[in-house]
Image (cartoon, rainbow, N blue to C red; front, side, top):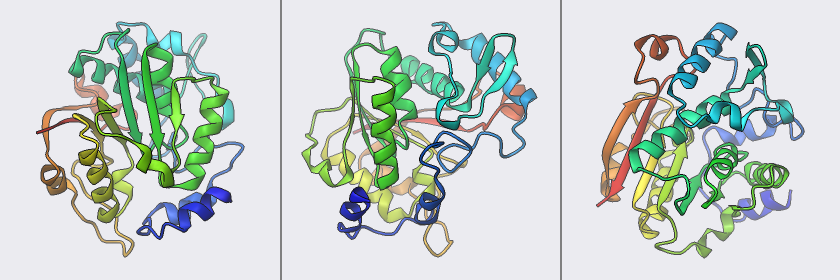
Length: 272
């Protein structure tokens, strides 16, 4: 309630989706099926999770699938894909995203990697990132009060000491040159264009050289409060970001791209 009051006082543009979604979040089961992460919608079945897990395992050169593991805490839906192996969408998506970034940016496991996660939700990516990169650090920001609250609780529970949760009304404390990479995963597609412009302005002001983007659709549409759609594609260029790499989430298998869990596109932008 305190965070909501602080965020409301900023008189920011309305959120086209989260204004109603936020009220539906179960604070004790925030990793369950909800607006943070669809896990069983869109024909996601056990067979599809098994296919996706097989794809991840085949590409998992670091052994992250089993080293990270999944306990299903806070309501996450566990899928028993094989004997002794339960997975969640959280786990599978995180491995694919971080492996792609490691390859595209040539990250070493011991590299110092400062990341700004915009629209961090409950801290899914931050948890997995901190678990894998011992010298990496990540700052989580979100304009939704419930997300900031849950992210702080979750990352403390996971003992992610190199993760910082920064309230939205304190982002003025961030400094240019502080981050190597910004990430935005499945959130700009859910907000109005005015909000995307705000976030891109922040990235530009902070001179963050790389942006990892995962939209919900095959384009850069936004969702406006009146139900219409905007396009934040031109805004990327206006703020100095050009695409240097794009690939499908399941780029090595046409079958997985058709039948895997929640296929999509990965983009890496670099600031000119």
